[in-house]
Amino acid sequence: MHPKELRINQRLEERARAWESKEAGLLTGAQLWHAVRWCSSKSCRAAGLSDRVLTFVEQSYIEHKEDYNGTARLKDICRGCGVEYRSENLLICVQCSRERCGACASRGEINEYGDAICPCGGIMV
Ligand SMILES: [Zn+2]
Ligand SMILES: [Zn+2]
Image (tube, rainbow, N blue to C red):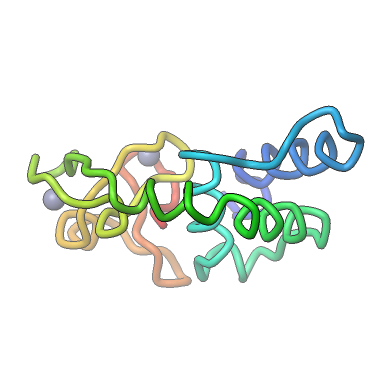
């Protein structure tokens, strides 16, 4: 699947449009965490995102930076080895949101941009 066709890109585009038309607010919590990680991944940069989405994610990060940093420090369990890590040390799948540590993720498939692929087929960021 080409990254352009990913559900996360469609979701972000829809959310950014809703924000522009003031129907929805900025991203917070896990959604913000997810979006920032995705936008800074090589796969995302290769796919390209609209200026609308980039502005939306950037603005969400600027206004909710503490929320983002708080999420980074939360602890979660790797789905591969069951060891507990801080979220900032886990990779998260953009499709199913399952988290894996670097060691477990690197044992799976790696795509052409160097990002690990989740067993569900989603990109891990
Ligand atoms: Zn692991
Ligand atoms: Zn997945």
